[in-house]
Image 1: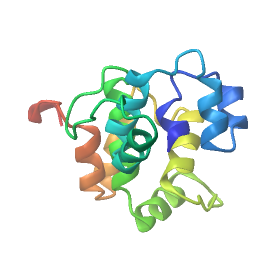
Image 2: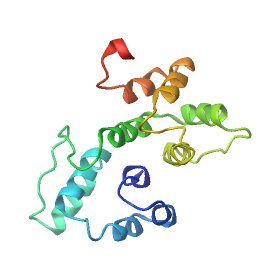
Image 3: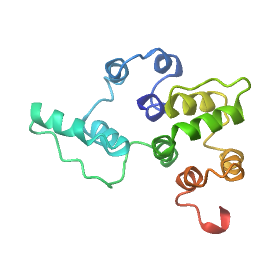
Length: 154
């Protein structure tokens, strides 16, 4: 999940070599501050992490659910919602649609990363991907990615 979230902030090779949350956070050591951690909690909805940090560091600020991230782009936040919303069946369906033979993704995050690597998911040109979601009746997934787009353009 964090590899998808931090994709715009971390060099691709470094990101692909990170095998744990600590590896990933260590790559952000120069950028790591309360703001980034708070925005990461907001976007990933991992509010348990906030409680754990606050227990160890009482000065850690409150992270309010539903508040807007200042660190991550709208596109990155939509991809996070998209990945969270996908079911195993959705991932299998998209795997079959975009891969022959199927890659058998372990989760939505590895699928999103792969589709971004192959530029099937591309911030500057999401329409073909969204159209394929519509065509294959992945309505909820499509709605997450088109959130904030006027209905006449959907």
